[in-house]
Length: 152
Image (cartoon, rainbow, N blue to C red; front, side, top):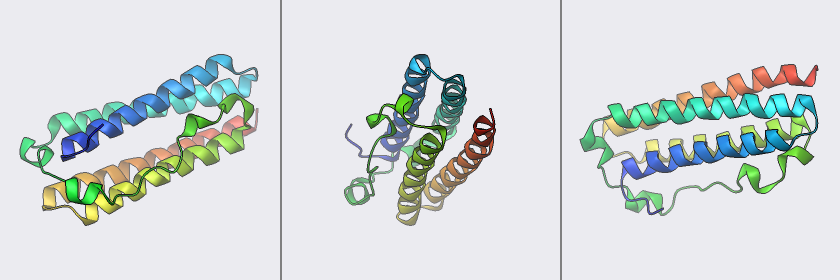
């Protein structure tokens, strides 16, 4: 996907969270352990929520902000070092899956911080700041909720 404008970034983020949802769902279907299946389903639900929330951001944002060009700073933006589903999640334990999930979301937070620092106007900066808060909050909820799956 060619990223030229802020709307392209949001589209990419929505697609990324949809892929994460599908990854978790697919691995949950194949999981032999009930605990692992429940964890993957739980994480899938959080990814769905992120997808919906970010889609709403895009629907509610000012079109002038969405059409802001960002080519020059996307070329140097941090990229995800790996995708979560490169590994077969059903072969990992719950702690490893949670660690990979946190790592992936932290990389997204770094991207948003990078983009917020290069935003050309206050509304664009506020959008990325909101995405930072959203990712941090959902990551915290995922970690906190996932802790109970270790007790099963």
